[in-house]
Every structure is written in C-alpha cells, then in structure tokens.
Length: 171
Image (cartoon, rainbow, N blue to C red; front, side):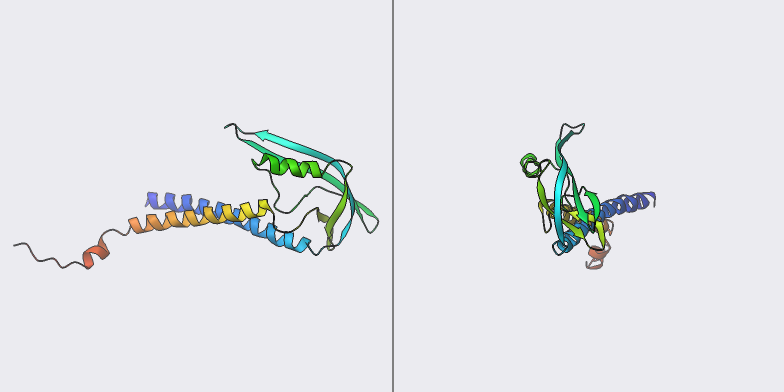
C-alpha cells in the first residue's frame, strides 16, 4: 500500500510538471497568435542586455533582456517582453542574434493588446521557444504516462496468463 501511494504521488508530480510546461507552451502559442492582430505603435529600446548564467553543473544559459518605451493614447508605457514564450536556453547564437537586433536606441514597432495596453511584445507567431515548450512538455507527459502504463502492467500479475492455460492435473 505504501509503495502504491508513493508511486501515485511520484507520477502525479511528474504528470503535473509535464502538463504545466505543455500548458505554458500552448498559452504562449495562443497569445502569440493573438498578438499578430494587435495594433502597433512606434517604440524605442531604452535598455538591452545579453545575460549569461552558469549553473552548478557548468551548463551555460543565454538570454536577451530588453526594456522599451511606447505610447498608447497619450500614456507612456515601458515593456519588457520580446515575445510570448521567449526564454533563455543554451543556444548562444540564437540569443546573440536577438541581442544584436535589439540594441539600445533602436526604433521598432511595438504590438500591444488593445484591451490591456501594458501587455506588449516585439514579435508574434510561432517561435523556437514556443516549439521547444510544446515538444518538451508533450514528451515529458507522454513518457510519464508510458511509465505509469509499464508499472500498471507489471502489477497485473499472472492472472490473465493463467486463465488462458489448460492445466491437466499431475497425478
């Protein structure tokens, strides 16, 4: 019984993580598709940085961060989101190219949500980060479901095998 509870909690946690990652990817995809139809206004990059971080295993993650200003209906707003789903990764060239394109002082179009003007992005549509989230979340979730199926099958015992046997008495 204790092992069953442990496995339920263990796999439940893994399923939850996979579903959260997949959900974040799908929400990012949805929002990014919505942003395609948002109005644009001129904006200016007021800060740009190329962040590098290294974890305890020595793995390096890169990310471009920006701040930009734009004006909607006479109101100055500062935004920081490059694109929905955009996040750091180990792809140096990918993030460095974004950093080079978004240098301080650059003028560009800012897409803003007309219902919530402080929600804005510089890019829309499907991007590498969204694809990664959806693929990783799907694989994580389906792998965990596969492991649950393997454990379930292994717990079934020999009942069905024995039911389909003809055994003659030995004596």
